[in-house]
Amino acid sequence: MFASLSDRLTSTFKTLRGKGRLSPADVDATVRQIRLALLDADVSLPVVRQFTAAIRERALGEEVSKALNPGQQVVKIVHEELVRVLGGESRRLHLAKNPPTVIMLAGLQGAGKTTLAGKLGHWLKEQGHSPVLVAADLQRPNAVTQLQVTGERAGVQVFAPEPGNGVGDPVSVARRGVEHARARGHDVVVVDTAGRLGIDEDLMRQAADIRDAVQPDEVLFVLDAMIGQSAVETAKQFDEGVSLTGVVMTKLDGDARGGAALSVVTVTGSPILFASTGEKLTDFEVFHPDRMAGRILD
Ligand code: GDP
Image 1 (tube, protein in one colour):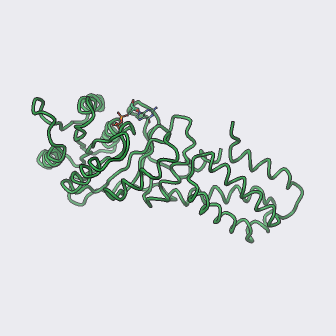
Image 2 (tube, protein in one colour):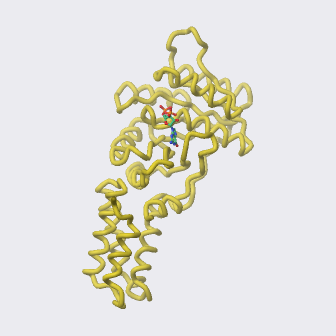
Image 3 (cartoon, helix red, strand yellow):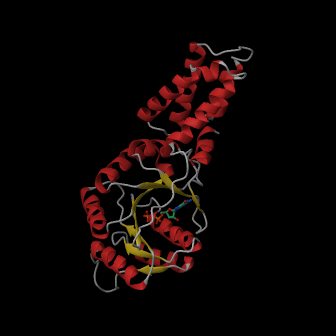
């Protein structure tokens, strides 16, 4: 069992109890604990280094030396820095001035894109929008049917390739899906795209072609929180391939500590917009950096 960051800090601070101030050696010991805890939470090493350097600087500063309880002050700083790195305030969806707004979902197979498309559609409808889901994942058997089932459950229309036409061209389906939305007065289009088990050039080229065809307002990287450290490399490649504008974390109902969130935001510079916390349509929320910081800390 790994001790949580809070546990680690508490035990570090026990040895400091009674001390009015933290010496540089105390700060170093504390920063070491923070570093270990972040690594346990799957934050990547370069990100941990960057983050702990910022903490160290603040922990050696006046706000801590003047604090009545320096230990608590350091915990507060760690929390604040986590929130800052995770984007501060929740970022809202960018909506197009001339609808429809196009949201493209990208990510590895199994990340939860198709599931998310349904949830997003459901949520958008609740927000008063008239969304349509476009089934442009023609790679994974059943992805189209799965989206149709999810869409039906969510009460959201799904644009899918006509059956019987072979595999079809995902770029054309995506383009026609957006045209369909415009013609029918839907104001938001969610385009589900294919993923592979790992990154490959074909996948990335296809995703880039879809992006060029539909000119999305948002390109959301769907990230399985459980994949841990490898998230960084995957996110980087998707960012290079299709220029991500945001991230959605999925499977946060699992026991992942969510450190991948911190790494991915740092590496791509893209904020997290939404979190998926289960398989039901309603297991979906607007992402709050503050809550994620709490999750990583506790
Ligand atoms: P895709 O290949 O990216 O379209 O992934 P899917 O949407 O098909 O999801 C892959 C699997 O993960 C499915 O079994 C989903 O039910 C499951 N899944 C998706 N999102 C979540 C989530 O937030 N929590 C959990 N526990 N399972 C999820």
